[in-house]
Image (cartoon, rainbow, N blue to C red; front, side, top):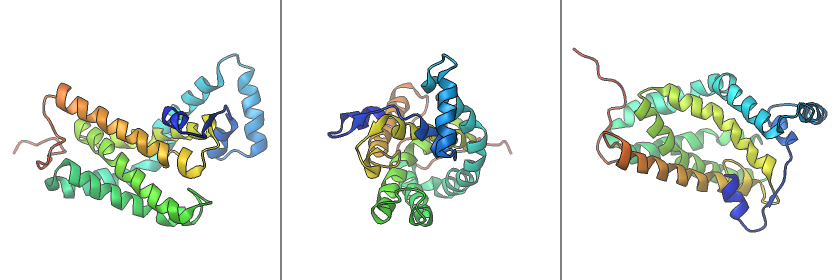
Length: 214
């Protein structure tokens, strides 16, 4: 996402590390003080924040994401599996995006552009959905999508390293997130076609869960 953002005209590189902590709920004073303390450790701040993000993503944020993923990659994936990979991912992405509408209207995403933000968020979830579907079906476990969802907190780094692009552009659910998701889909397609024993990114019905013997 950062690479995509830097390729766009008008977007510049910055190192506003406090933005990461602000997204985690720190006050501005707490964020500034914490960054100052981290800088004194001698370890690059980006390394420390990445480690923090991965730990939180695999624990606290994964736990928060589990409820969503039981719905999207649990119930919906199971019920829509006969549609095949792409149609399943499309419908799941649409439901996933529309579900965020009340949160966007409350200002939790795109506070300055809530109406356009609803559309942008839905496009982003549709773009991300095939990646989540692929991980879930390959792992045959909703936990794969849960940990990935939780670790998406690292997407906040777009606010750390990108500036002057506008929230609809540099948000992890904005333009940079959508374009990066397309690269992610391409990576899944390469793995599916060239490395996997069985292709699942087809129009054929999916069998997402381990088969049990009668």
